Image (cartoon, rainbow, N blue to C red; front, side, top):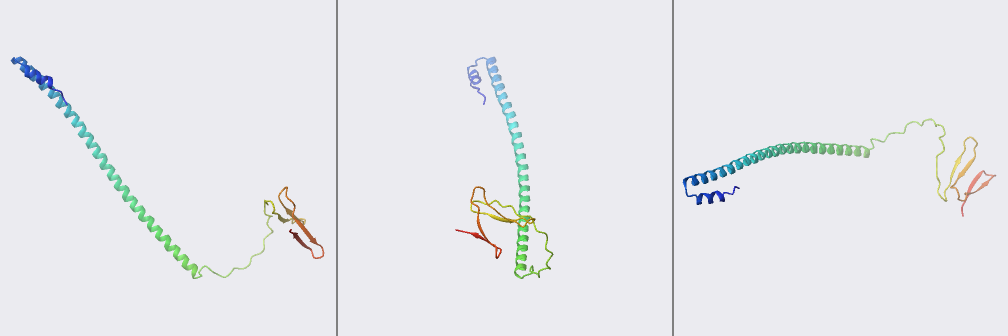
Length: 164
């Protein structure tokens, strides 16, 4: 806002025509400058407001499109969930009716003996394994622990594990 107090005071104090005209010109020039500045500021503010309105309009349009896409995706997800539930119910019904139970197939030939499994016994545990090439039976137990006790009955060929 322009301060025109000096120009008003000069006008009030003017006595001669030249002083009156000079104070009036000075006052008019100061007001004109203020009006031009305000007009420029107002034009810039209007332009900024128009730009902001355009941006907001575009954003609203994009938000609307995103909402439509999300609604379609939610509908597709609901349809997929309904289809999956229908399939689950169909499979459960077939299972209950015994549709998946059939007669056993023919017995196949026995395959070769597999490799011995790997074990890692803890304290108090042991595992037995047979060396197929020699027929020897081995007991494996953790290092630092007491080996398991066995008794062999030669007459029957039975092997007994001795427990306390």
